[in-house]
Length: 137
Length: 169
Image 1 (spheres, protein in one colour):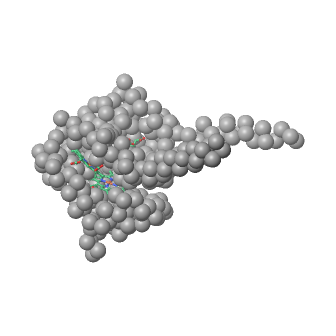
Image 2 (cartoon, each protein chain N blue to C red):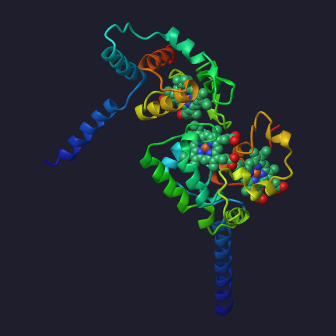
C-alpha cells in the first residue's frame, strides 16, 4: 500500500502530457468543430490562411491593419506591438510555445480578430490560419 | 582592551546595519520595491512591460482596469475574475498607498480630482523628462514615452536609476 503515492505520481506524470495541447491537436479540434457545424466542410487550406494573414482591412484609426501588421509578413519573424514591444514569432516552427495553451489562443483570437476584422473569426478562418502557420517552415 | 573590542564590535554592527538599511531602502539606486503577481505579470506584460503599480495612484488603476476593452485603442479585456484579482493587486501597491519616496512624489504631483490613465501624463513624469525632445520620443526604437524599457534598462524590475539609462539612437 506504501506504493500508492508512487502510483498516483506515475498516473499524474502520464496524464499531464495528454492535457497539454499542441498545434496539431488544436487543428484537429477546429476540424471537428467545422465538420459538426457544416457537413459539407472540405478541410482547411494553408493557402487561404496565408491570404487571410496578410489581407488588410481599414483599422480603427483609419490606417489599414492585418494580422501581419503586428506579427510581420513573415510568421517566423519577431513582430512588434502597438506599444513597441517585441512579439515572439507566431509560427510553431520558430516558437515552440505557440498553440500549446488553449485559453491563451482563445483569448488572442478574440482580441485580435475583433481588432482586425471588427468581429470574431469563424472556425474556418481560425483553422486556415493555423494550417498556414503550421505549414511555414 | 576589552573595552576597545566592544567598541569595535559596536562600530562594525552599526556600520553593517546602516548599509543594510541603505540598500534595503533601494532609494539611492532608484528602484521601486519588488512586487510579484503571476496574473498581472502574464496579462499586463504582453503588449508592453508590466508597469510597476507604484507608478500610478489607486484611482488611476481602477479606471484602467474598468476600461480594458478600450485600452488605448486596443482590446485588452480579461475575464471578470482575473481583472478583479489584478485590480486588487494594483490598488494594494499603488503610488498613494506606498511609502516609497518616488511613488509619493508621483501621487503628490496629481490633482486630487484627477485620475490619469497614463504614467507619462502625470506632472511628475513630464517634469522628470522635460529635457527629452519630442523628436526623441518618436525615434523608431522608442516610439512613445510609454516605452520606458527602451531607455530604462531595468524598467521591468522597477529600476529607474540614472546609471541604467541609455537613450537609443
